[in-house]
Amino acid sequence: MMMQLRWLLAVLLACVVPTCLAQSFPSRPIRLVVPTSPGTATDLTARYLAEHLMRELGVSVLVENKAGANGIIATDAVAKSPPDGYTLLVAASTHYINQALYSKLPYDPVADFTPIARVNAAYLVLVTAKSFPVTSVAELTAKMRAQRGAITYASAGSGSSTHLAATLMTSMLGVEALHVPYKGGAQALSDTIGGQVQFSFTAIAQAATHIKADKLTALAITGARRNRSLPNVPTLAQSGLAGYEIASKLGLMAPRGLPAEVLDRLGAVLGKIVSDKAFTDFCEAQGLEVDYADALAYAGAADKELQYWRRIVTISGAKAE
Image 1: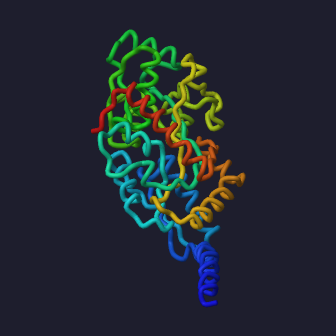
Image 2 (image 1 turned 60 degrees about the vertical axis):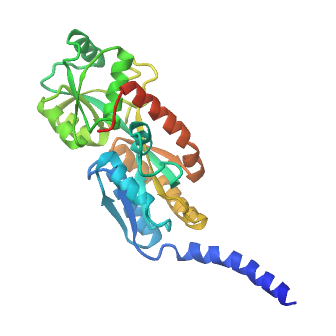
Image 3 (image 1 turned 135 degrees about the horizontal axis):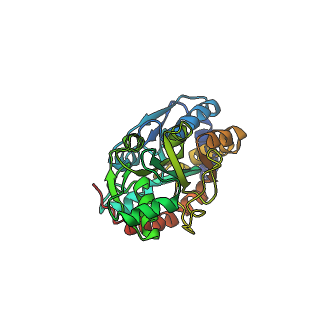
């Protein structure tokens, strides 16, 4: 009789504890760690999610920018945090790029994380300085062929998506240009506007205002279709580079070992936020596109992402700084 009671108690506890955990989470502030500086597509997405997660979960959700080392500092900090749902990473494609770029990382981008949901995709726009007289990809190509290796372009750093976008383009065109890496996208964009370099790839969210103010010339975007915030700008594929596409896919990840009940809770709330029209409107205003995947689909896409970026890094010849 006593053994039966013990067995029954164990069964009841197994049912009750997960339910209590799910109901008690969250009970204190949540941190969204962003591996970029303020103003980037990753940062803007984090701030939107933080505001809406706070409404849905009833606790403070804080955004912490921890830029540096191509996102490694922030990513490592999250990987080493307790897997309790209170420290989350806003991951972009650099999460996967870095495995191909660096010979050794202090974490495994797949094994050390629990994907929660992918929410959107950030595309880049190819822009030129107003002092550089080109208005199309064809004209830029002609300049690069005529002045082999003399035309300069800026990037947010060696191995960044802005660097890889340029090297993929030049390799597909069979031309050369001189890479000028910066420590971040803001200065790279500023020097493109100033004419210190001839062209660059930059996030649509950061470049759109300058394009509309006629401070930059937009030649093409890196998406598979035109972007609603820049409807008159063609894609690279429409400009003669069939199959060209570069996107940084953004999502939330937790450290490895996140309890299933917390994962389900966060996943359900994120799914609700992303499915709301307000999120679509936010993305369109920032030049982003909704690209939702639940935890299972987000995790399942990791190998494809790693393979894709490994190929682009190989083409670029990029090395870690």
